[in-house]
Image (cartoon, rainbow, N blue to C red; front, side, top):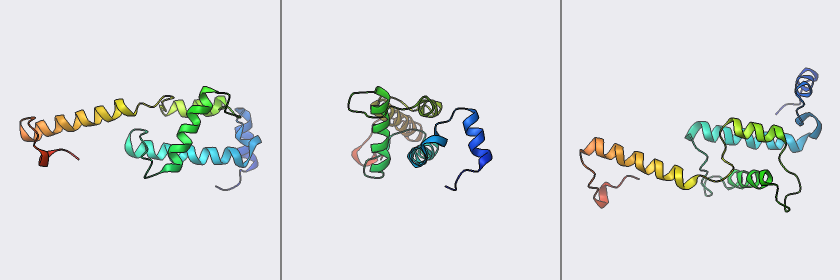
Length: 127
């Protein structure tokens, strides 16, 4: 990311954005946020596989912890960070089980439409 211009800083200050005042720490947060946003746009969910992107998964877990404001968290999420995450539908509690169930259900429906039945043999199981 390139340094912010004076005009960009002024615009961010006009909406009380903390990014201007906290420098690299906020820049790092927004870089991870962008990574999460790109993941969501590509996959349509937030089920990050720990083997594929352990760094992003750890960051997501940290945001949930910061949101809850437990005693172990030194810096809670700002209102702006919460707003950004909620704007893209980020769940404060993992909905992994529900999303995975829906994905498997959709695969089953597709299998039924393609084969005309739901009697799935071992070699026909969707991946």
